[in-house]
Amino acid sequence: MKKTILGSFALILLLLPAFSGAWNKTGHFVVASIAYDLLLPNTKMQVDAILSRHPDFPMWVQGVPAAKKGKAAFIKASGWPDDIKTDSRFFDPGDPQTPEIPGLPPGSNKRNRDWHYTNIPFTMDDTPLKPPAPTNVVTKLQEFQSIAMFPKQMQTYALPWIIHLAGDIHQPLHAVALFRHDLTNGDSGGNDIEMKGGGSLHSYWDGRVGGSLSDAFISQTAATATTRNPKPAQVSFDPAVWVLDSVKQRYFVYSFIGEGTHQDQAAVSVNYATNAKLLALEQTASAGYRLAEFLNQKLP
Image (tube, rainbow, N blue to C red; front, side):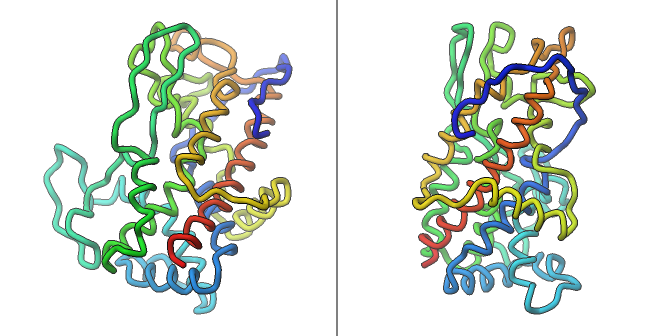
């Protein structure tokens, strides 16, 4: 599955439900669950201590037995950078500025939506390309590699972002943008590809890991992902390497049927849907392994 997946398409088409997220929260929870179990003991102690200082920690661990609070907080923190998109404590550019948040460093009440992705351009019809924005998921993860040197409040702020962005960068449509004769500014990571049944190509891929947030589903999906995709002997902790695995999937991801326009909405075959699920599980497992290695290396 590391290679581009093409395969012969079945004739039966699937109507596609709409999802939201990046992966959705299920995908992030699965990545975090895999990673936490692979943290070295000293790293796990540091991670637990850092997250315990977060202002949302009490909410993350409400009702959780003491022995399980560390992993519960780590998993819930993985969704925090998406949660703040609708949190009134935070603001977007052009909005009225909100008060600083106690326990977090100054300036950390911005939503920073542009941190979640990079649009590495490609084309299949020679449309001129435009480079991705200079601030993106890769540059932020590279910046956060210095977490061990950050002041305590900055560590508390950065760690949920690291956990979350490690998941985002493994979702193929958080890494690429298609440039086409009718999409001369790119398709915003599949957000401008319209699917039959509603939603975009991007939202379709956000939901490939699943949709349940139950502890049982997260644990089972993590077990399925890691059993199908065992941890390799060598695991990269370099985000510049991680993003390339997502970019490599671009021709499979864009091998849907139709143009993806309003007049010719895109659809996928049974074969595509099956392979998309398998690729999502593989990318999720890789994200978990690599996130753990990143933290084990950067919080030794």
